[in-house]
Length: 315
Image (tube, rainbow, N blue to C red; front, side, top):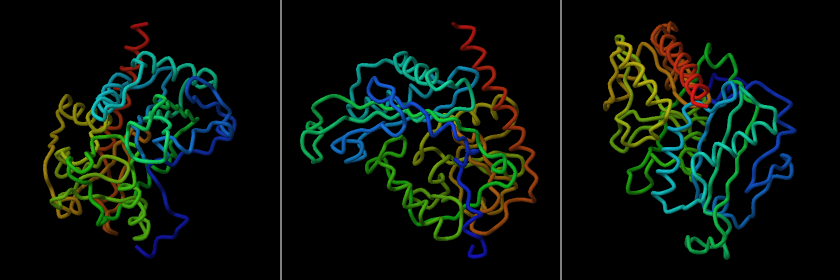
């Protein structure tokens, strides 16, 4: 992909520039701090070891889309790695709403909620050295995906870095330990692409370094089995929407052969919802028409509206 200019590079998290983000307040362990003052200790286990979990969520009309699903994943992950916090999901919602209100945010906002095992007594690995409780940080930014993402699409390159087996580091954890994905992204950039298409340990198409991956072949929607990738909230919503609306969908093993010959391909994630893929390994995907992707985008937009309306009705 040497013909691709560096300035053409995109990511699935490209957002419209917003100068308000220079002045945001960030939640750090009970305090709302200006961006330039929001800090954690160099002894924090998240900084030192990547020992922590995070969630990305979007704010629509004053409410967090699919909040319960995000909390289910977060608290399942925390429990799995014995990271105990006093806060309940409702406490987390209070933190996020308080931070959103302080920043004057009601919509077009994205949150990165981070929970680590907290500061350590000594700069070593053992979890027992985290003696003072967890660190909780919430970064909320004014954030609207660039319009070009939905039109031009993302260019992917297949990379040698794979998502590992559950007994090494289960990809279902949304952990701070993202080096595997960072390496994959670097490999894709070195190949001239925007982001990486990662295979599973058996060589089947799996996920990207940042999002879940889908293809459309002969009006069927395919995605991986989910065994070796982050089981994203948006991924599951797309699968459910397809099943509820008569769109054939399969969670299955498939190879690059099927991906290269797909009629459409798209990524799913909380930030970009459904982002089209324009090419894989310098091979154009389909003819540029994306009727199934556009139908799913419309269904997903309606689903968000339903979720927000239900949250309002429950207050």
